Image 1 (cartoon, rainbow, N blue to C red):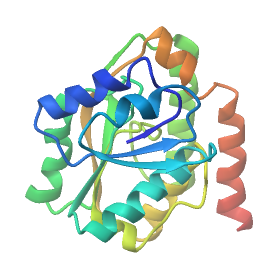
Image 2: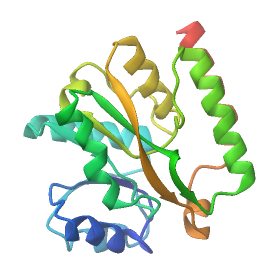
Image 3: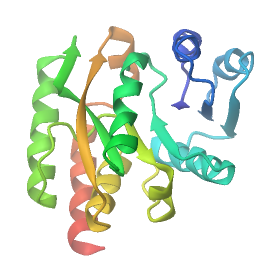
Image 4: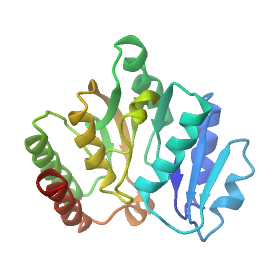
Length: 218
């Protein structure tokens, strides 16, 4: 789990995970300047900190490097802004143990999405179509932050994109390595808070640029 200035919701999010029996939580504070760290340190979880804000991709890489050293077999990405439902985690990780899948993507579009603005939905759908075309795959949701992995996946790939472009980089490397993946339905709940905190619609242009740059000029 990564976070930047999530003091308003982070306590509720972590309590929701612990209540459902998820105790092996690695929390990366990505340079928060509010009370996020003060709130989180009251929980018996692992807390890693960036002195300055480095971005989502960099934070996930920091957390992943720690987890690999500890020998855990499965890694789940779960956002700290309250959009994700911890009840989805069990079904998210099930294909790893039952079907020997390497990566499981949560999909709001075969699951449930609540409160999504029309413009955001159109941008996401456009990004899905473009990504599927670029990489020759068929996914229904490509920028959903809820995912599960065999930990060994990250002995083959790593994040070099520090910010939100990490998601397309991740997918690109999964395809390149020939990893087995599938989607499962999850619930995403948009609120005024999460929409204000999340990436801006205009950032889609930067992500598109970086996808094309890696695909054709790397």
